[in-house]
Amino acid sequence: MTQEQQLKLQAFLDGELAESEAREILAWTQRDGAAAALLSELKNTRQAMVQAEPHLGVPETREFFWSKIEREIRRQEPAAAAAPGASRPAMLRDWLLPAVAAGALVLVAAGLLVHFNVPKPAPETAADADTPTVETTLANSDATTYRDASEGTTLVWFSPAADDNPAPNKKPTAIN
Amino acid sequence: MSTKNFSAARLVGVAFLFLWLAGLNAQAADKTLKLEAQLVLGSNDATTNGKPVSPQIEKKLKRLPLKWQHYSVVNEQQFTLAKDESKEVNLSDECQITVTSLGNERVKLTLQGNGQSVGNITQELKKGHVLVAGGSAGNTIVVLRQMD
Image (cartoon, rainbow over all chains, first blue to last red; front, side):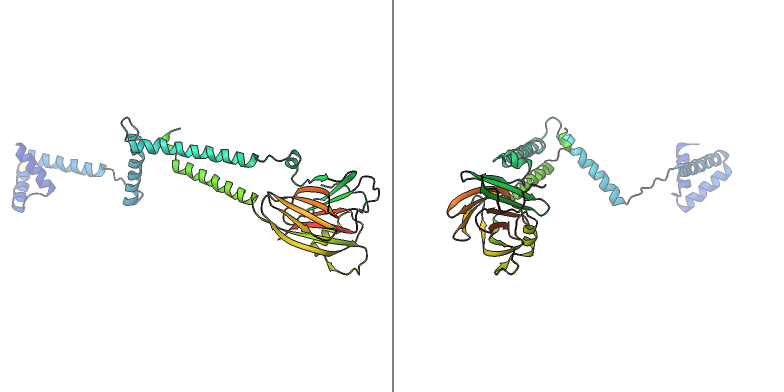
């Protein structure tokens, strides 16, 4: 059997022959045992291939599947650009912008430090912001402080140091 | 750190967030205070003439160790103070105060009696809080508060 005859058999099996030619091949296979055997073998092979062919399905839509591929391509692009010989804009984007941003952060942090430290609060106010700082300006005078933290009230009573009978009806006691 | 994962835009965003927060803080520190100073007369006579103090102030005053049970307003003045600004307030012929805004809602109150300085009080004066100052002269006290 020639190679051309074998190809004719394959074409017959694939339905690629004209009707008259197909009839001739069919008659030939009925007369020739070798041709019939080859045709049978080709049929079996095709059937085996069809059955064994994996049917792979994509769970996502075609557009979504492509978008994933596209994202992966884009993700890998910067790595390629960072390779030796990368372009100047890429280097600018990768190094200069982060450097400028880091510098801005440092400046902001420094500004915040200066803002919170100048002027430095007095030690007593740092310990308790509600504690008043009282200063008497008269000689031989005294000041008594009473705090009602629950009401947010502070009373400061100035009196002569020798005055044993200040206006408060009882000795003020600081409460916190 | 890999520059691939280094987001410059995110870092710049954080920097601007810090700047904005710092601006807010500075704004709070420098805000103008609306204050009210009252010269209040203390008495144990319920029929005392005069405008009574507000219920909120009265409640606060009655919790203080003062010898009076009733309080009425002799004079009151409202004023605003920018940061580092001072204001002299004449509450009566005998009683004057000078109030200075120190920023961050801190004020310095200088109490004067008959033109003579008696003393200074420096304190944080938040909204709802009251600073009461008095002396052995008369039955009056000074009430300073931040207005709502």
